[in-house]
Amino acid sequence: MTNAITAEGLVKRYGDMTALAGVDLEVPAGKVIGVLGPNGAGKTTMVRILGTLLRPDAGRATVYGHDVVKDPVRVRRLIGLTGQYASVDETLTGTENLILLGRLLNLTKRQAKARAGELLERFELTEAATRPIATFSGGMRRRLDLAASLVGSPKVLYLDEPTTGLDPHTRNELWQVVRDLVAGGATVLLTTQYLEEADQLADRITVIDKGRVVAEGRPGELKRRIGGQILQVRPTLPSDIDAVAGILAELTGHTPQRDENTGVLSVPAADQLLVSALVRRLDGAAIAADELGLRLPSLDEVFLALTNVTERKVA
Ligand SMILES: Nc1ncnc2c1ncn2[C@@H]1O[C@H](COP(=O)(O)OP(=O)(O)O)[C@@H](O)[C@H]1O
Ligand SMILES: [Mg+2]
Image (cartoon, rainbow, N blue to C red; front, side, top):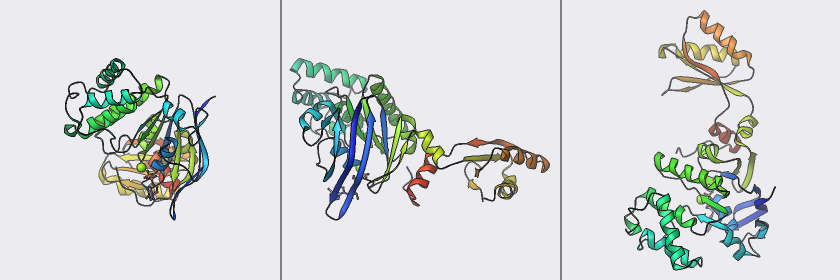
């Protein structure tokens, strides 16, 4: 299988600060890789190196076999990059921005205009196209930024935290755009702090923390890696929650987690027999449950286990 992106031992330092401490990466063509990590993990630094905007201090990276340091011009022809912050010109309209980019990419006037119209329609920006960007909402700007990165029909697209700060509706739209792009043969490297996003979109996930890869795999594999399943139960009557928590603690030796909003108790489940044991005990105590079952840990739980981050900004 052809690799669209490779990185070997990427290192980047800013003074004493080591932003990347030797990162390896392999992204097969046509796949979505999620680079997941908290603030300051090194995600943007990595994207900037892969996007030829920053030179690594050590290591090597390629896009479709072209070295990002030795052959940046060839690499730039293959990639599109959407930054964490919109990189379009405030004073120009949506149409003008996209035409300008098309002209910079050597499209003819006619081609640039056609491409701009196509992209504006695809991102539902046609009506706003004649207004200066300064008047756009956050979601519109993000869509325009993504449209801008697609003017050159890139084979490889880097999306650096594309949905940070977006409302759920706009975020879902962006997810759909990413799926469409991949269906059309593009390779996408997406950085995110949101586990759900990586889970939704990525074929593989690389978890980075403090400039190092701390885990790599398919979303399901990562969830299994921290071992075991989670038993989840929701008593029908909220007044039974203490009794159920007591039974769970007795059966598993763990104090269950309580979700006060949903009334759900969860606890690590070492073996499958736990479910039937719990059902018998609840029956004996005449306690009814609306919900009872095993699940894999959420990516949030995996992420916390992998990075040992005890405090994290909640999205
Ligand atoms: N230009 C810079 N000068 C000094 N330190 C930087 C610079 N850019 C990033 N850093 C530091 O490098 C680390 C990684 O940053 P970054 O790649 O932006 O992480 P992320 O995108 O995952 O939040 C952070 O500690 C950040 O403060
Ligand atoms: Mg960043």
